[in-house]
Image 1 (cartoon, helix red, strand yellow):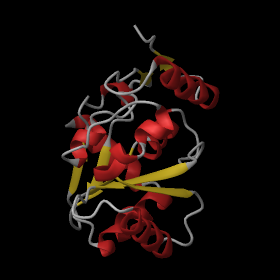
Image 2 (image 1 turned 60 degrees about the vertical axis):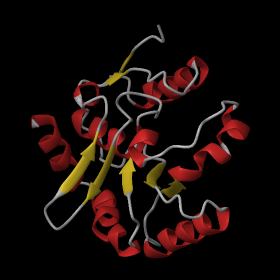
Image 3 (image 1 turned 90 degrees about the vertical axis):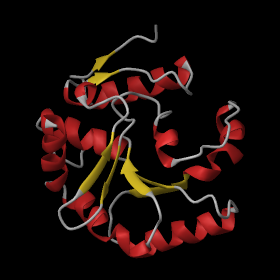
Length: 190
């Protein structure tokens, strides 16, 4: 619980993320999280005394809606999110996790069964430190989903989550992060 409280304190310092957290509920998405790199990198920035937005190339907004898996419906959500946040200075990456299986093999060469929940999707994200989703549930309440806990995140450890990615994808990500945050401890694939 100590890490979770510290995580929320750090995120509340980020004007960029707080703008998204404060207004995303206007879209009335059934189930969503803001997660992955933008959360992890904000924490790394705080821990390594960098500006909170340093190195963040996108904000991942994931949601789960299995009622209509058409790209047209997802594209409408993407457009609505971008309309809601016209002044966010970084890319917004919005994905319906219920339809990831429809394009994942073409993009990454790996067959993926359909996810049944948004949490099941987060369980497969590439590293233990980035398999993390957060949403604001009300004025003071937060939901943090971190299937591998928060120890690696706060200890600057990058460890592979082998549920879905390959060693090559993991090493590309790890090497890219190590360039920006040399303090990171990159764990080997084995």
